[in-house]
Image (tube, rainbow, N blue to C red; front, side, top):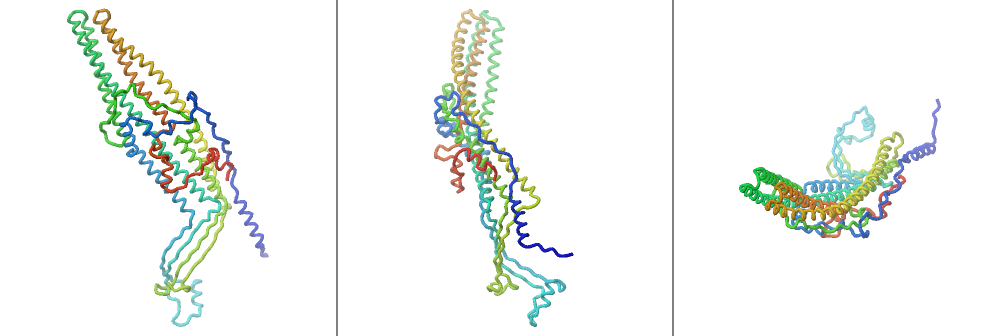
Length: 519
């Protein structure tokens, strides 16, 4: 058989074609064409001013000093926020790790060894055949000592490492926004729980006054029974009503204890009395809500900003995964000293000097399924992030619309309930006078007192719902995340302190879909 010789040029051309074939990315699913269009304004939101209550810091929005003290303590001690801070530290470490991958890795080490080769091996035969003078043979066994610095660098030709670093930065910023979103939850939950506690105080006070009035009525009924104007049945009915409301007092006290401890838990402390101002609750009012424009939600809501940053990171992941289909350039080098002994010969140059350098270019050729799977997975995660962003924006808009409607309806309901309470208060006085003059039955007095008590309790509960609606609307607009003492959001301040680059600003769609069309 004749030996077939393949020309070097043909072999090089074949390798080049194979490499070009490897440098292609698979087809991917089409990305959504655009983000959901936001309405120009909120329904029933007044004149559509661009000013939003969501830009107010919680210290400006809330005026109760006790409530502000609770919120401030919670933001310093709350365990959930402290856990998130550690997760943010993990994200920051990943950024630094990705940043370090861009630069060469240089290691310095020493080595020492001892080698004895067999005479009937290649190395042994070479030593045997050398014409070495008497007394100058190779030591056996042969020691070796060295000090070597190794250099290893993956040249980021296709921006794979830079995209991975940028994706880590985006996720670090997203984790910061996640903390801001948690802050809005905590601020709103503390405020709602605080107003619930104050409402319970007022309900307790109303019930105590009602029990006092009913005790006076019970005494009057007993006197009328002694005068044979009413029967024992009336006394029993009044007595039962007093006992029922006295029992209800302990139920409210238990709710007060549980609500206080829920506040203590949010603040991050063990159970203790909660300082509060319960007077004037029915006339208490929070700042009026300014909804602003729907586009403001994209700037004010931390969860929307977090979803946008996660979307940008997913796009960068697709770029980095696509770069794995292209050839990778690695440069390796070594520089050091080697000698047979640790005496002065180890540091004698150039005799003991050793060095080497090599460059390697390699591209995936056969069995690229793992790279393709990673690329398709990154593409699917990007599409999922797009839908997640759209869902977050839609949810934010609906929350604001719902809360604006709730505020409007609760305000009207509270006005009507207040008029009902006023009418029922007059009915108590009137029914008592009629009963004392024997022109009304005792059941009318009992029914009137019971309805008046229920109306007063409902009015307090309605006021608590009204205040809660204002708090929830403030949260829905993105309020409670920023520190009013400076002009920065928590993300901006933390990124500046960490010395990490922030994402480039631009059009919303361009930032949402920076890698539309594939890599």
